[in-house]
Amino acid sequence: MSAFASPAAFDAALADLAMPDAAAAAAARARQDDLTKPPGSLGRLEDIAVFMAGWQGRERPVIARGRTAIFAGNHGFMVHGVSAFPTSVTAGMVANFAAGGAAINALAGVAGLELMVVPLDLDRPTADFTCAPAMTEAECLAALNAGAAVVTPDLDILTLGEMGIGNTTAAAALCARSLGGGAAEWAGPGTGLDAAGVARKVAVIARALAFHADAPHTPFETLRRLGGREIAAMAGAVLRARALRIPVVLDGFITCAALAPLAVVAPGIVDHCLAGHCSAEPGHVRLLARLGLVPLLNLGMRLGEGSGAAVAVGVIRAALAAHDQMATFAQAGVASGVAAGAEGQA
Image (cartoon, rainbow, N blue to C red; front, side, top):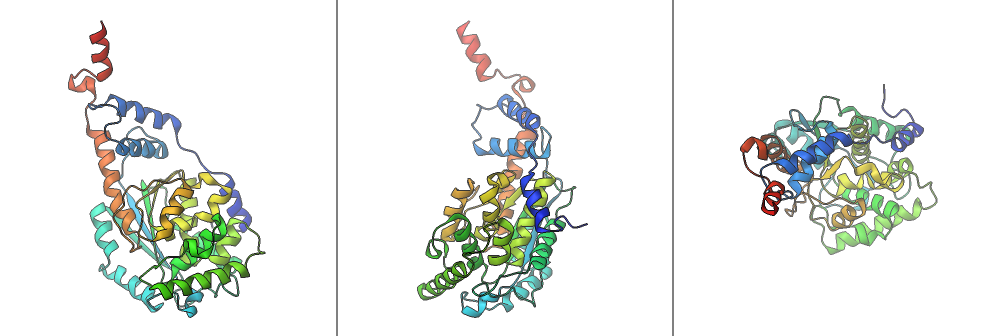
């Protein structure tokens, strides 16, 4: 059965977000404070362990099975020359993923993640969003459900990524409509546009925003009008993961932009998400701030493919290893800072 049978079902899921296990998170925080270190001395690694505990519902969270899901789609607005590469590259990169030759193959492997690649009608690009909705209602629902389908209850963590030539244009349009600001505030060079290319991109986004200005400002309508199949799929995956309380690691600008329309009506949509990194695409810094996310890494990456999210899983694994393997003060026979202070006052 589809996770989202209708726009109303999508809206209902967005209005009924699962919450973390507060008791498990509290137990994890108490354990952190009892490990052989000054409280807080491992910085965000401690917070990551507590975050994972809350969403997995156990004091000592694990990553026994993790998955990287990469969604691929093509865009009708590419007729306006908004990318340095042709749409044929999308299918070429999907073939490269299958052959094991892409960056994400190497990075997912070293992170201990299984890789799932989902091409979405690559031979049938979305409509040109400057003069029509990018997707019909049925097409958007199909994309949302394709995303939801990759999320299975046996996962301990899910990382997301995308492949779609030109999709920073769709991402910028989604952000502008959802969060405000003009096209120029959100559009960047993407895969390497020069100044003239960026100006052309800004103009295309502005035309799309004007064309859809009077359309309903609902998450579903914004996604279907200005998004792409791969972008809607990521939104569906995040929402399905929330229902199953599976923590999600987001990748770059496009992955985060998939959540911008949802965050307008449900700011807590990202509560089960970690931002893997801050990409070099200029709009990503602003978008992360609006979503209330602090990235784990800032390595100047701008590849997409879920690459930054996969690298960030190494940090998460380190956080969980310290949380699980360190001794408590009692186990080590070492006086805690609190105990030592009390003895000094006696």
